[in-house]
Image (cartoon, rainbow, N blue to C red; front, side, top):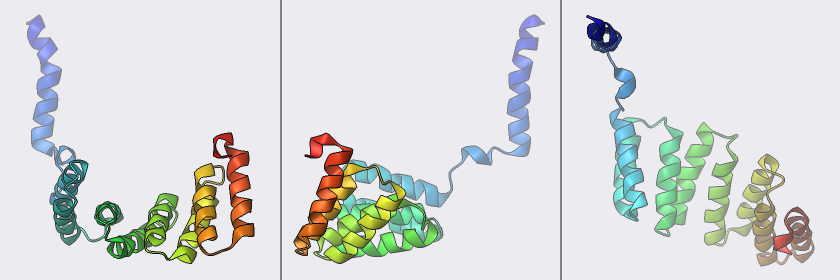
Length: 166
């Protein structure tokens, strides 16, 4: 009888879950497709990942995180304009997420849209003003536009924040 008493709480939980349902353990189809995309990306299978993200977006077009994931996959394939479109969409959902502006700035930089990259790096710096690498990246983009004085200010700031950048 003592053994039955120790099993009773476990049986009660199992019964409760079967009656109430355990939907919190089940992922939606969209989440499953997004996870499949993540798995494919981890393996470097970016085109396959994009197919999974496409499916996830069809199932849940209001999940900004999926657009980020697909944008990163596009970026890994060198399809920066498509990546930028996805980052734009993700920013619509989460305009206060500095990381999104960082990803987009990197894509703009890759296609030579340095002023757009600078604008986004500036936005990211507003979110994280003590991150030295952001000043370095913005400084490099400024150099590419021959704005050497501004670039030097960013390089000096990066050095001040992290001596390894000097």
